[in-house]
Each structure stands twice: as structure tokens, then as C-alpha cells.
Image (cartoon, rainbow, N blue to C red; front, side):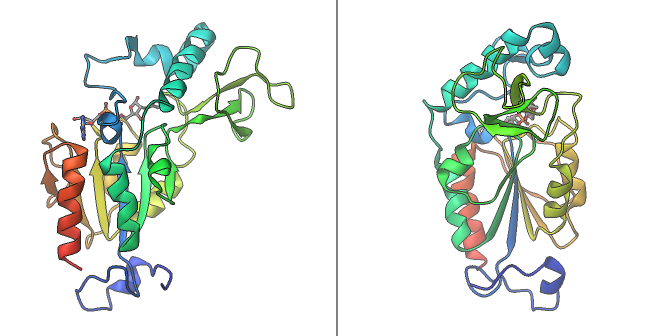
Length: 250
Ligand code: OAD
């Protein structure tokens, strides 16, 4: 299999799709909490603005952490423990399967590891990862963390550790990479996100004119672009449909 050619290189080729052959189309995916909902992980905004009985700001902001660090650590400890009880669903699995025919690049807002556990090989976590911790003094000191994280847990420099999660009001270090990926997409899929959180939601502005856009969400109805294809259904069902659509074009 030859390496991916940038989208600009494809424009010289007649309009056929090349899937799993010499040149793969680049499928860039922006996923959100909805893709993991059928695995049993609750979304953020489907329950009265409360997230597992907490206001989002209480457990997902630097101010929340400063005012009650153990509450915040416990909150993410529960989420981390929950990862051991859930499994990737059909939607995650199909995204992995599509790697046979497409150059699949996933940009996820999710902090779970279900894309990786389904086998996906290119996953960019915009909002951090539950199974990592980092120094409260140095955002670049990130270490793997599988178990509970408590006040008093320190890195090798003696710095207190915090969850490796991008909280509200913090910068999104992976955004630049996400913008670059989006601008090279031949196909862009938005799946299971309310598109309410920026800068992630702004990625849609970076797709190029030739790019085909698909949305999978059972509830959303607002249009993001002039010509997207809307699959108003749960992620697992939507991915089965999308796979058929994409393969029919190969
Ligand atoms: P939201 O909870 O805002 O949106 C979830 C979306 O998933 C909604 O549009 C639902 O309609 C849709 N949905 C629900 N069930 C679904 C299913 N079975 N299949 C497909 N879609 C389904 O979650 P996000 O958009 O991911 O940030 O939220 C973005 C960010 O806000 C999160 O990353 C998180 C949160 O604050 C941080 O924690 C930093």
C-alpha cells in the first residue's frame, strides 16, 4: 500500500474513489460523547446540564480543581474505573475496519480509550485522556496512569499530579494538529457531538471544498455546512449505513 497522498495531489486524478488500493481517501472523524453512549458512558449534555450529578464547571475547570481537588480527582477516578467495565461498540469497531479502505484519522473529544481498544491506529485526543496524569506545574510532563489518582500522588520531580484532561478555560494543545488533519480530509465525519464546545466545534470551518461531510447523531438537526449528508440515528446504526455508503463509492 502506498502512503497517503495529500488531497491536493488527488485533484489531478479523475473523480473515482480509490479505496484500499494505491491511494486511500483520507477520512477524518470528529467524535464526541455520543459514539461511546451505546457502550454505557453517559454523554455530557443529554441530562439537564448535569454530568453524573455534577455541574460540568465543578469537575471540569481549574477553578473547580483549586476549590475541591479531591472531589475532582474522585470524579475522574470513577470515570477511569468505569473504563474497565465498558467495551468499544460497533461504531468504534467499524471505524477501525474502515482502515482497510481509507486513511482514517480520528480526532476525538472523548477522554475514554474506546477508539484505541477497537483497534484504531490514529487517534488524536483533543480533550486529554483518562488513562494519563500530568504535573500540575508542567503540562508537558504526562505519564500513563491506570488506577485511582489521589491528592499526594506526585511525579518523579515531586509535583502533584492531576488528571490529563483539558478543562474549560484551558488551552487545547492538540488543536493545531487537528486543524491540519481536518484541512486534508477528503471525507469528514462528525459523530456523536453536540458541537457546543470550542475550539473543537470550529474544526468544521477548516474542511476544504472538495470534502464530503457526513453527520451521525440521533438528535442533532442543525446543519454545519451547506451540503452535509445527515444520518439521524445512533452511532452504531449510523456507522453501518455510512460504511455501506462509502464502500458503494469504491
Ligand atoms: P455532548 O454531551 O455535548 O453531546 C453528545 C452528542 O451525542 C449529542 O449531540 C447527542 O445527541 C449525541 N448522542 C447521544 N446518544 C447518541 C448515540 N447513541 N449515538 C450518536 N450520538 C449520540 O458531548 P460532546 O459534544 O462530546 O469536554 O461534548 C464536548 C465536550 O464537552 C466534551 O469533550 C467534554 C464536555 O465538557 C471536556 O471534558 C473538556
